[in-house]
Amino acid sequence: MKFGIRECANIVFRAKQETTIGTNTFHVGQPVLYIDTATTSSMEQASATVYAQGGRGNARLIAWEGDKTLTFTVTDALISPVSLSMLTGAGLVKESGKMVHVHATSAAVMEVSGSTGTIDLTDALASFGDITSTTAPVTIDAGSDAPLFIIKTEDDGSITGDIVTSTSDITYSAGKLTITSPKWNNTTSITASVNVLVDYYVIKKSETVSEIQLTATDFAGYYYVEADTLFRSQSTGIDMPANLTFPNVKVQSGFTITMAGTGDPSTFDFTMDAFPGYTYFDKTKQVLCVIQVVEDSLSATATSGSVMLQNSALEHRDPLAQDSDMSEPAG
Image (cartoon, one colour):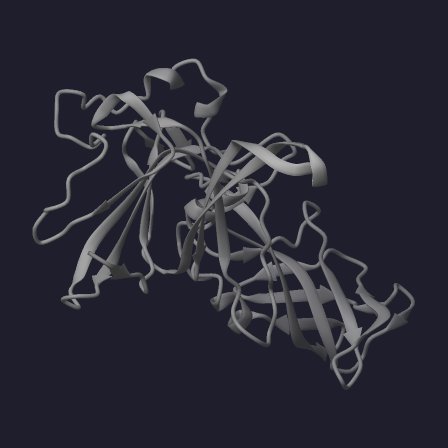
């Protein structure tokens, strides 16, 4: 049987030990992440070869191979807080019952009437949530906890060195900032309306914000990974289900996120180093990867015993991972 491969794989990452990401705890064997939006997935094996050489011409006489490595790479078109946490090794924080700060900037007009300046940010704040909520409305931190700057802008929107200051605190209410006796840099009084850029912090419910914290001590973890794809038979043209199982992979902690307004959208690469491990169905043989192709009829004689047989060895925990550093969770 010959087959061709021209289909991406759907990937599932399973916890190798109890792993906490954000507010969720994943048990051994429980799916942590499904990737069904991958653009490519590839598996690469490499090894090193050394030779005994001698005689005339110093010809190669014998070869020894070793240092085998297997790398599985998945490029995802989309990202989620959980997958970004797994990719970066960062902690994912999503608390409840608290309020958090989110930075924002808005181009606006400061309307001046008498000795009072008013900036209406109702439309800008609407993108952050409900400012009229009676329980936890979206507000602006206009106090001393966070910096708030009102900066004069040119006609083309570029900022100047002039900032709005006041003889009293800037106050916020119902989507509007109010400045009493506004002045430029605390010297020249402002008596006419002016274009400004407001640099401020929005306060909103912590339940609506996923916070990913990258630190110097957190690295991506180890997972049991399965990839489902299709192999097409040359003789029948039928797509046959194929499964790749990697019982023990380490997600590499290096990553690149590209943010650009032109060209192709950013993709997210999960590069995984495969280590020997037991599958869920055989605890007697460690493998780097198992590839299964589901045929209509199996006529070929297997040269090695399957490590994916249904038997009593259904304990998902890897017996070698109990006290191993290779079972550390992400984040």
